[in-house]
Length: 242
Ligand code: 5GP
Image (cartoon, protein in one colour):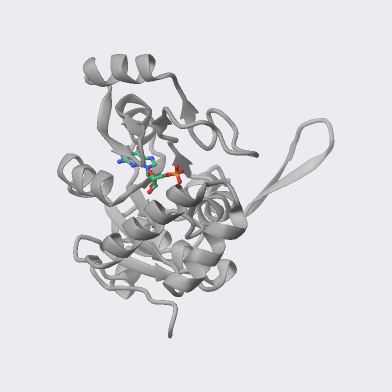
């Protein structure tokens, strides 16, 4: 089985990358999100094992010292890290993987996964980012300042990223993310409809799932050809202003 692709999303805190990621994964079920482990307290609504894997400081340090993290960092006084085994297992199973990192995390991951696809999400403006962080209401004044300050620094240097998306409107930004992941899959010879490969002889098929008669349609040959890959080029930046 062909190994999946690694997508790394980076954005200043408050740019909506979690919302975007959830919207993308609803559409592209052959991409797995591998949550980071963190020592930070869960925010209201965050689910352990889905948004993050919440661990104590001693658990974190144990994993780090055993070399179980592909990278780790201290961000705003909390520790965050990427569990290597979860990423490798999903890639080996043919799934593409989505990770969410800060700038330093994505720089380290670039060394570990040079073929990864690195995407930066920008807010429409720093004023808008301030408004979003304030309306979220989950940080105190000092934390808000730290997050805005580091956003300013992160935005100053985007050279290391393959794509940039401006998140003015979630639906539009999600469409751009879908275009990027689909294009990269095609360019690598992975069917963008990998989750729908079970079609019979490339023909559409319908199967019934579960007790509630929910129907699943396999559209069959999705008509994707590797020659179309030229339409999305690595390094080409996608802005929200077209
Ligand atoms: P938050 O606490 O707002 O969820 O995340 C704070 C920052 O930590 C964000 O910039 C986020 O991208 C970053 N972050 C989350 N997980 C990881 C990780 O595994 N490694 C690194 N280096 N940064 C992470």
